Image (cartoon, rainbow, N blue to C red; front, side):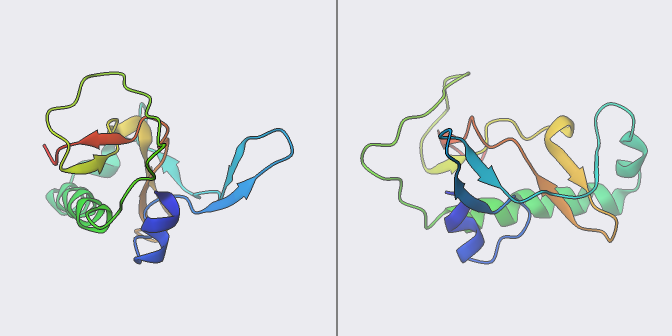
Amino acid sequence: MLTHLYEVGFRAAPRPLGIDEQGREVLTFVPGHIIWPDRFSLLESERHLADVARLIRDFHEAVQGFTPPPDAHWQVLIPAEGSDIIAHHDLAPWNLVAGDEGQWAFIDWDTAGPGSRL
């Protein structure tokens, strides 16, 4: 899915680089600061909250065209309401990186799976 996001131009997620010799997924590093727990001030302005909301909408639009492989397995922590998209399922301040030049990104995609935009 991360490859798909990259291929359709969504840059607010790490890009996959492959699998290492121990079977672990290798991703690009997302520079910046995690919002949780000490940098909530980065979200204080209405403009930044609107930026994050747009980022979520952009993700949902980018993932809309993704078709998971038939053998996909998902880590389901909380049962999803619907399955119209592949959702992140943990969009929260602890998975939001604020970059130095206004670049925002979501990390920790291991619980992504079928869900709804809600």
